[in-house]
Length: 157
Image 1 (tube, rainbow, N blue to C red):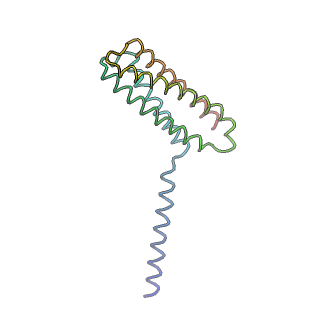
Image 2 (spheres, rainbow, N blue to C red):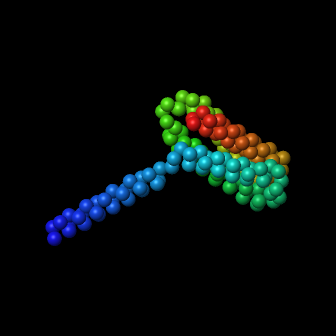
Image 3 (tube, helix red, strand yellow):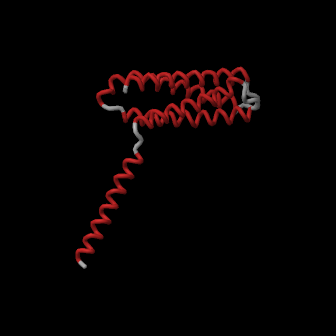
């Protein structure tokens, strides 16, 4: 009876240990996962900005929806970039720093354009030229951030 209790105890401890290790590894994204996530959010935010820039969205409500979605993905891209910075191995950090700084610069510019875009869209009669200008700036900043991200990927292979 005593050996059965010991075996059950060992089995339970093994299961708990396995679950805890599995939970830790499954919640920590890999560097490759973070690269994919950053690209996805840059691309999606760029697509929403492009909808406004190209005139695919016609009404102010459609512009607002696209701007909100672009902002959400910009924030997600910034969060993914922050995680990615932490995941770069120590021996690659020096080569990566210039790219991280450039991505941060492009994200800051994109944020500025997004804020200006949403401010313009919140007016009773938004100026179409300003809306297009800020959407273009947002699109350009996000495209530049993704190009820099691709350079970062190459530098940290």
